[in-house]
Amino acid sequence: MAEINGLIDWLQIGWNALLTDFKTLPWPSLGNVIAHFVFYYPLMMSYIWMIGSIFYYFLWERPQGGSDSHWPVLQEYPPVSILVPCHNEGDNIKDTLEYLSQQKYPNLEIVVINDGSTDNTEDIILGMATLHQNIRIVHLDANQGKATALRAGAMLAKHEFLVCIDGDALLEPGAVAWMMRHFLENPKTGAVTGNPRIRTRSTLLGKIQVGEFSAIVGLIKRAQQVYGRIFTVSGVIAAFRKTALHNVGYWNNDMVTEDIDISWRLQLNGWDIHFEPNALCWVLMPETIKGLWTQRLRWSQGGAEVMLRYTRTVLHWHSRRMWPIWLECLASIVWSYLMVIGLAFWGLSQFMGVHKQFIFGLLPNWTGMILSVTCLAQFAVSLAIDSRYERKSGGIGRYYYWMIWYPLVYWINNVLTTVFGLLKAIAKKDGQRAVWVTSDRGVWKND
Image (tube, rainbow, N blue to C red; front, side, top):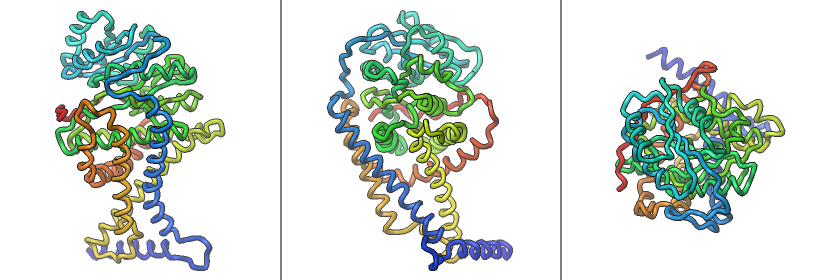
C-alpha cells in the first residue's frame, strides 16, 4: 500500500506541475484547455447536429412530404437488384423476403447470398425461390464475410442499381423508389443510405435505441448531408450505383465495418452519398449489455480502421470536403481517451484520497446540467422530426421519457468502446478477413 501511495503522490506532483497556470504566459494552462475541450466538444457538436438537421428538414425533408406509407412517382423506373447477404438467418430470412415481395417498384430482382450458413437458411430461401420467380440464390460454401458476400452478389446482379439490406431487415414497400430518385436526379450519386427504424423495443436498452437512432444516427446524417459529406451509409439499408462500386473496387473484405469503408472510398473518389429518411427499414438490435458492447466495439474499431487507413488520402487538398468528417472522428477518439483519464483520476480522488486538484474538471456540477439539458433538447428535436415515420408503430414521442437514461448507459459504453476499438484497430493484422459473427438480435416486440 505504501508503494501505491508513493506512486499516487508522484503522479499527483507531476500532474499538478503539468496543470500549473503560468500567469506570465498569454495562453491558458494545458489543464484548462483539456477541461474546456472535454466540456465544449460534445456541447458544440450537439448544437451543430441540431442546427444542421433542422436546416435539412425545412430545406429538403418537409417539402418532399412522405411518410411510412407513401412513395414518390418517378419519371422512369430503372431495373434494380436487391442484394440480401445472410449467414445463419433461419429465424428471420423468410420475413425479410416476404417484405421484399411487397415492394412498390417494377422490375426487381432479389439476389440472396447464402454465406456458408450452417442452420436451415438454405432450405428456407430455396422454398421462397419456388414461390417468387424474381428470387435468385448464390451459395458460398464457407463463411467468407459480409463484404465478400456483397461483392459476389454485385458481380452476379443483372442491373446497374443495387439495394443492399441485411437478412433480418424488413424493407418498407416504398423504400426502393425513395432511394432511386437520388440516382435519377444526380449522376454523381454513388450511394444512398436509408433510415433504419428499431423493431426491438421490449427492454430499456431497446427503448433507448429508438431515440438514439433518431437523435444520433438520423440527426447526424441529416446534418452531415447539409455540411457536405456523410460518415457512413447504414450497413443494414443502402443503395449503390454499380459503376461507382466498380470505380473504387467494391467492398474490402479486411475491414470490420465494410459500410464505413465503402462510404469513405466512394466520397474520396468524387462520388456523392445522400441520406433518404423516407427509405425506412425495420431492424433488430441488441437488447443486452453484452450484445450492445460487442456491436459498438465493432463499430468503433471499424471507424478507427478507416481513419487510420485513409488519413494520408484525406489530408490531400482534393479531399478537403472529407476534412470535417475526419476531424470529427479524430476529435471523438481524443475526447473518449480524455474522458477515461478523467474518470480514472476521479476514482482515485474518491477512493484513494488523492487531492481534489488532481481532477481538472471533467465531472463538474453546473456544466453537467448544461450537457444533460442539451442532450434532452437534441432528443426532442430528433423525435419531432422523425415522428412522421413512426405513425404506424404508435408514435415515437412516448420514448422520450426513456432518453434520460441515455447518458448513463450509452455514453459510458460508447466512450469505452471507442478507446478499445482504436487499440483493436491498431493491433489488427493487415489483410485479416472480417467474417460473420453471432450477434444479439434482441426480443422482437413492437409495443
